[in-house]
Length: 248
Length: 221
Image 1: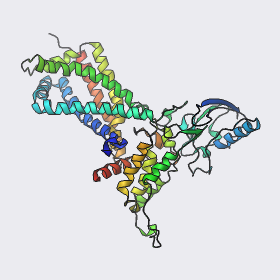
Image 2: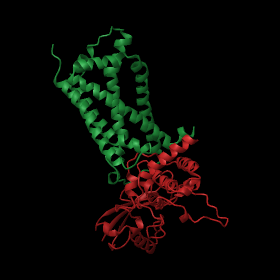
Image 3: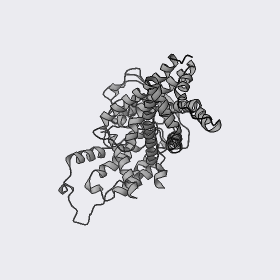
Image 4: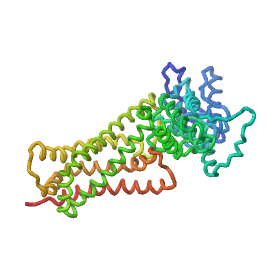
């Protein structure tokens, strides 16, 4: 199929970017979206032009590295997939595809379609951990009885790959879904109780410091999340934060 | 202090002030419906609300503060949200993942705020002038006549009805959303969301019915 691509090109963080038009022929429906960009880049390189920079790593939908706002939606029009698992059969011959970086003040553009998502790392560092004795007598986690429902909920929250689609989709560029998933995966488990009060307060504080927006409960993040992280996590974080603040 | 600066705390304030205003709406629509079905009861209830010192000097200021807190916090959140995305998307397909009402609460809210200015001018300013500026004597039978008379002009009735449509849209998302902001999302949430949507239609519809009814049934002397 033949596609008309409108791609955001930006030399570096301090240079203003712009949309550049490309026409790409010979795209197969079985290609992934990133493979389509690979072909475009091969053409650009063969013509002596600079290739389009974009983030990618595992290409299996599990690392959270790929991003891209595709035709106005993070990870494109398909549901529960990352850009690397988005197939070109979702598009039609002659389609125009607008490809932009994830947009948020807290995700500054590094180059072209690559943004700096280290704000997520700093939120995680602020409290997304538990204390474990590693001095030789570490207790096997499986020896602690955990309610099946809680274990499943914690695991569901832990499937967040930190790609940033929630921020990209949100009209407010809010990081509540990411932060709440990282709070929830520990809040639901006995191992997470030791730092529970400080964790939610510190992670929310860091989230605010990074400049993310507030939550309007539109649910866009939940719809666009490639891992199906639920809004119930945001409600849980809101409860945890209220409880932690009351405790002081 | 950390609570005041927090994004979550601002959402708590927004949610609680919104829920407070919802409870006021229930009282307001109940009394107003009496103007259609029982003008005498409407006069009695309005006189009680207008002259009871607890309502006048405690509940009324709390209500006004609730309204101010809700819209000021709405503006604060909106400004912060706009700042959080300093470069806009060339193409942003909001309709693909979120309902229009949830993405445009600020606009439905602004229309309601403009309506409140008109509504306060129509009833509250008049009431304050009647009681405290002109110092007129108590008249427990005037309220029904004053209310019906207000809806005589077609333009005012239309403005009120249009505002009630926007109120419906605002409640459609806001009522259930306030519980999510307060951390309530459990097995009852799906059922409550349905109730909240019915509430968001029925209450504004009742207000619109009252306005249209009085417009079509003027008091003839």
